Image 1 (cartoon, rainbow, N blue to C red):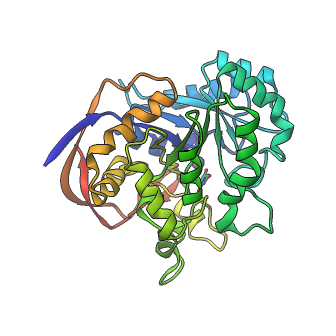
Image 2 (spheres, rainbow, N blue to C red):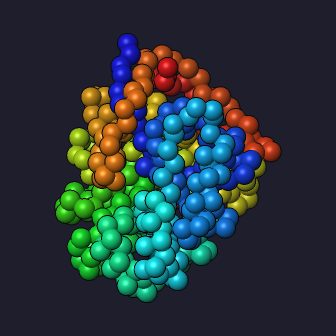
Length: 342
Ligand code: DOR
Ligand code: ZN
């Protein structure tokens, strides 16, 4: 059995830079027409010039003849101005990303208090620039499993109320609270859902020993009600939910460490992972909308004109891939998947 679908877009992707970028970009190019490129490099992409340089770097390492289109994102800091937003738009940047300070990898330069950025959000609203949010609070006293729900109460609600015309993507949602928030909010609020949050829950990470390759942020939650709510949302056909892998490569040694990095690498078989989740829900007919239409529509982009073909075929995910000057352990390493991109 096989089926064809419009080529998907990855609406949330980390590709890093330098040798790391070179070693993994081909995997995304083989699957996706475009990707929304996250700006949290060691030295974050905080202005239009850096976005242009980063885009050029990505284009320079694409396989010959590739039509893959990296779409660039600005990293918001306390000092991002309306002028920065205008310059970013003028150079083709498609969105700006909120990382609350300290929330994840390379977020030390992130935003300390969103209200400081309200004048900038005002301009984004006026200019039609999308706001992408890592939706977790970082206060020490808030339990790590509650940080997304508290973010909705303390931050997201206020932003949505103060900026009713601002388009927002609530990134990599992980809870029923987030699903419900998106479902009940107006049409300018959407969310990305990762393959690992569809296929795994916190038991996968913690039962039988701690599994660092299942550690990401926001952290995996419980199956019921959270993973189940995500599966429902992704496969519902609701246009507010779309594909964003949050594939976040880290070297094996940086993950298998006393203080392991957050991030799960899924770019090697992103669409196969989603197909696996959708098939389990008996909803393969909903995959094309989620993967190839709803994200593009939200970003006001045309659908890709190429197609891809997925075949029902067992294959074993490799134990590792080369990564920069070392190697990386992919999601589902050594496990058998039932779908293959051909
Ligand atoms: O697990 C994660 N890894 N979550 C993020 O938000 C960032 C990412 C990364 O860049 O490593
Ligand atoms: Zn991310």
